[in-house]
Image (cartoon, rainbow, N blue to C red; front, top):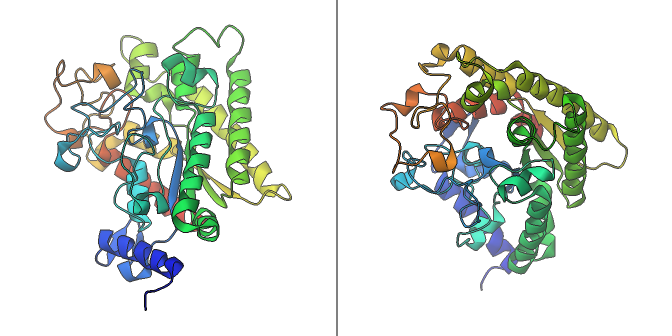
Amino acid sequence: MAPPPLLLLRLLLVAAAASSIARTTRCHGYQYKASQGPLVTAVIVFGDSIVDPGNNNDLHTQIKANHPPYGKDFFNHEATGRYSNGLIPTDLIAQGLGVKQLLPPYLGVDLSPEDLLTGVSFASGATGFDPLTPIVVSVISLEQQLAYFDEYRAKLVAIAGEEETERIIKGALFVVCAGTDDVANTYFTTPFRRVEYDIPSYVELLVSGAEAFLRNVSARGATKIGFVGMPPVGCVPSQRTLGGGLRRECEPSRNEAAQLYNARIQEMIAGLNAEQGFGTLVVYLDIYRILDELMERGDRYGFTETTKGCCGTGTIEVTGLCDSRFVSVCDDVSQHVFFDSYHPTERAYRIIVDDIFDNYIQVLI
């Protein structure tokens, strides 16, 4: 007698998780066994290039990473659209939670039922909470990412039924990572916002957008959301080049904007969590501290280059400018915190995700 469809589906999920994590493993400070199964039902991600595994590949935009040298240390040296030399944070998070080895993009790939059941990323490189940000560079807005989630949910129902879909979404870890492109690109690089907003008022625009987005994700059934804060934007290689003078020092205004944003975001999240009837736990994930540590004291982690990327000169090359047809790549990527002038290397990402697991993940599982 064949097992019932729902039981068969759950057996399929456990088998998929066990096959991707075949032995007892210690990952990011948490020891688990394959027999335990995944620690969450799925990983579902919204945001920008830090968590975009290739959703921009088929867009009419310059913001893409589906060409070498991106992916030079990925499986089969494939440039999948991930903005790094290898894995990105959401892959590492999915691995650390025992869900799967890679978190795929929602767009542009053939997704199996198993892929859909265990989560995808809707993220689009260079998007943000400011509605102008995705328009300037022709990428996917966060509002459109929510629309794709609604489409995704319908696919889950078609595969597994409404009851199982609700279980998956309720048990999933949602991750939201955006805001940096708003500050680095829309505010400081283009003239459009600075004529009408000073830094504090622009930060309020972003916080308002972030709050509305979190409410929309919560309304769709999320019970656990990890919200990634902003890094020291002014110390990113491209921002040193654009605003740090001849010595390419950290640019203080960008960092002040990031710090103000992080403070206001934490206040906003505290308000949501205290709000009666708001049925979602939102956890702020601080990455400012660990990235500042890597850039200021990288030698402690074995890095010898913390102010330039590995691609080309390392000072400005990113996306279309970081292209193996036109520029070379450094000899030893592992010595660099950044792969291009904006995005960290896989090795740096591993340290950042380790820090997230050490400090926050127990609250989110």
